[in-house]
Length: 308
Image (cartoon, rainbow, N blue to C red):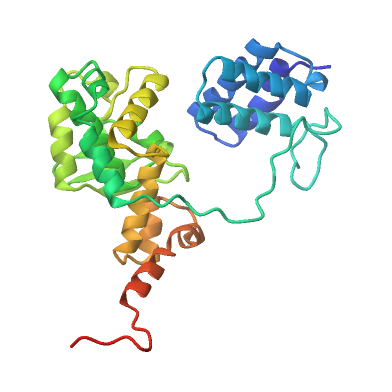
């Protein structure tokens, strides 16, 4: 029986290239497989039982992996394991090695609305950057007094453009047009594989000018030369300093940008363009509910006294 590493290399990896998946996505899946093999071993795929998967999760917990990181790795492995199952309506590209997948993703019968992010939370998050000691330690290529500005600019950039953090860290200074006050997001960084052009607020441009240095790392706009673990440790420290619980994620800032946009009365097409959604239905299903708040605020019910 073929092993997990062989299945990933021979059978599953080619589907990445066929589907033109980003190189970073391939690396993320390979990282999850290597971690699984490191913990459980390179087992034959018919030996990948739910008991082994439980041992894998328990081992990550003992190593003090964050819950989000554990869910990420389990999601990647779940997708790979699901491909090993027999062909079916939800698994047309399976290779039929197993009678059933080690575990199956649960269906989503209900539409889960995004988390509501308050204006005061984002304001406190922004101000906490200057009050968090960890923000004065990283990134090391900047002077210590400029490092909190890097974190402030990160928040302002995502809130004003609603970009995904994967695109933010992939942009270069060549993508930033100071003269036209805009950022050009290449198709290689976009989830829908489309080039995006987004205007930038002057306050965000001030932040970029402040953190710009002569020798930027590989020309990156927001270079991060440290590990992802350090990034999230500092981000959690900023949340704790701001007193936000449960903590906001970087993707929550994107959600906040879209929620604030719909509260301000933008149309659905503008909302779709801001959120970089491929479907107008995605934008309306998740965010147009903000109009209900404006409706209730201005609603005059029977029996209410109208003040002239």
